Each structure stands twice: as structure tokens, then as C-alpha cells.
Length: 102
Image (cartoon, rainbow, N blue to C red; front, top):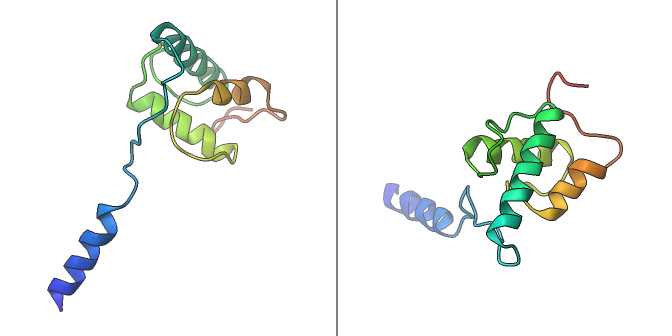
């Protein structure tokens, strides 16, 4: 009985999407990617999300802030810094704010 439960668990988790799926960056140069990440970090900070240091690098705090924004904005949650995300953060109406910021 326990073996069948363990086997079912392994089968279910083997095909699950990893928590940090690879983000598409094929169409971006490193400078472009840096600029998108930095812009996303600045705007998320202004809107009450906490991406950490604004350094143009994608780290765990930035991914967490992106996911929190995506969830609050009812977007697909993947934690990826994209042009579409930056456009949504900058131009969506009404603005989406983090906890305690309005």
C-alpha cells in the first residue's frame, strides 16, 4: 500500500512544473534584459511591492515581487521579467498596488 502511494507521488511530481521555470530571454540582448529588470524593479518599488535592491539583476526578491504583482493583477504567475509585464505595470488602469500602498 505504501509503495503504491509513494509511486503515485513520484509520478505526480516528476512531471510538475518547477517553481522557477526558465524565463524566455531569447529575443533580448543582455543590455535590454538588464533595462527591463531594472525598470520592473523601480516600478514595483513605487507601487508597494518589494523587489529588493534595484540593480537590474533577477534575484529571489525580484521574482517574488513579480509573482505578487502578477497575482494581484490577475495575470498568469510565472515570475518572469518581460516587456509585456513592464508595459502592464506602467500602463494598466487602475494601477495595481502592493499591500498597504494606495
